[in-house]
Length: 112
Image (cartoon, rainbow, N blue to C red; front, side):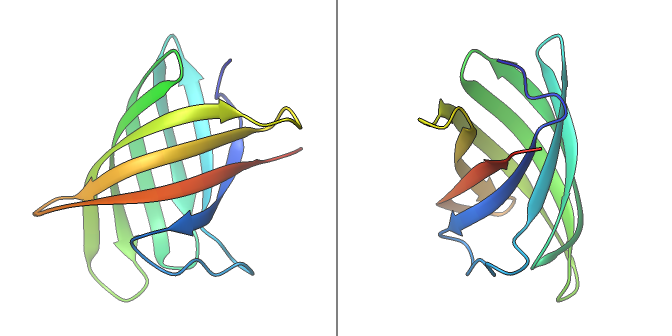
């Protein structure tokens, strides 16, 4: 498994309502266990992340600019699952800086 070049869309989140018409989209890059990428979408103007992958566990730090104004950042730990269709899903547990509330989101791979 390698995340390089894979695109995901958020399908659910406990931190915000997901706009199904323009969900947040994530583009992943990976080399030698290091992951990084960018994201944009319904609540985010521009976001970046960097971290590592060990097996099916991805650990990242992220920061983004909010469409409503301001910025947010934090840490995320994702479990990578492979669906029956062969596409990946990321089950993410994340927190925002300055807030210990643990949130969960699900992101689904978008086929090419």
